[in-house]
Length: 125
Image (cartoon, rainbow, N blue to C red; front, side, top):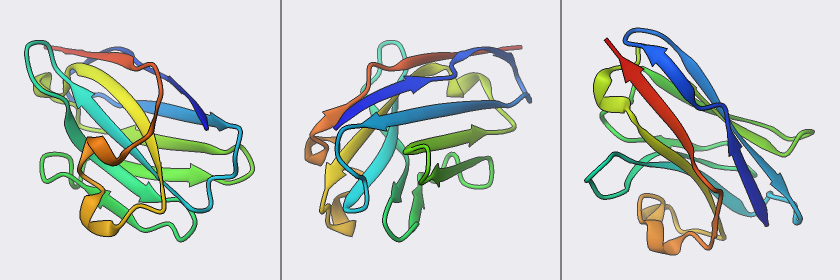
C-alpha cells in the first residue's frame, strides 16, 4: 500500500483544515488507516484511526469533538477534518496503514507498516 498525505498548510486558530490520505495498491478493506502527528521537538503521537472495512473510528482525547475521520471507498481516501484548530495542533501529520490490526493496537505506531510522507499543519494566532 502506498499512501499520499496532503492538505496541510497554514491556518489561524479556530479555523479548519481537511487532510487527505490517498491510497494506492491494495484494497483497504482489511486495513486500519490512522493519522499520527509530530510537533517539533516532540514524539509522534496518535490522532485518529478508522477501521476501513467497517468504519469504526478512534480518536485521541485531545481531538475528540474537533476532528472527524472519514473515508471514501470509491476514491480510496481517508480524510481528517480538523475544526477549532488550536496552536497546539501545529505538527507534521502522517497517515499510516496497518493490515488486520487488533483494536487494542490502533494507537501504537509500530504496528503500522505503511506510512505517507507527512503534511505540515501550522496554526497561528
